[in-house]
Length: 254
Image (cartoon, rainbow, N blue to C red; front, side):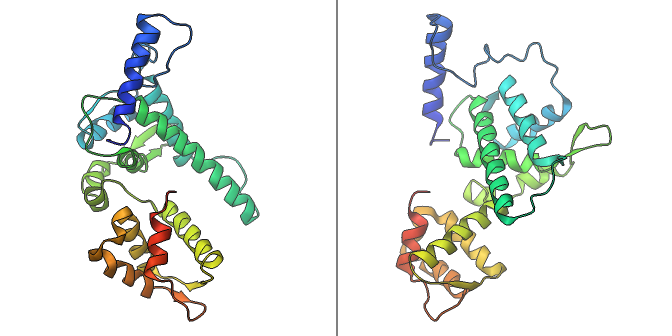
């Protein structure tokens, strides 16, 4: 978690000094504080104990959780795993807005969960990888007839054997992949005037692979992967997106 570990350590230290040592009225807030968000008065459910056991097997540096971790994780599971009573939006525009609203809410909850955990050392996984681990575990939760959370027995096996996580350190879920490709389509049509007519499963597989390459996409050894992606797409016109254009779009900051 080299991308935010130092930041979290700085927040933790500032909070301890300003809030608990100097007793300031205004202080740095720390979502991982074990004093401010103590679990001493809480009954920790079995659903969370199983989560934490599996989570620590993958993220071995995870040391402590607090009330924030417990509450926000539960909110995330309910948001993503429990059927609501709300009606299904009738129009695509409304569905897209609802999807985007829900996605942002999910990201906010997961951000707090990651930041609420105390790590004994810098984890091997970056923030995106830790979030991927949380998502995979949570996907296996179900609500039984008594409205209690239960966890699929295959969760640990599926997580520890996930090739994408082991290879790249994080997972690109299908919904995220669809969003990224839709933006890619819009960009190719609006900026490069190249319209994509059809794409297949191979297209999405190649697209995910080059997304995982990140800034390394422009390296000579990865050009063949980009060419496979190019050839997997059916274009409306004869023009084909060039490698340079693809490099430019997929390596720019999101």
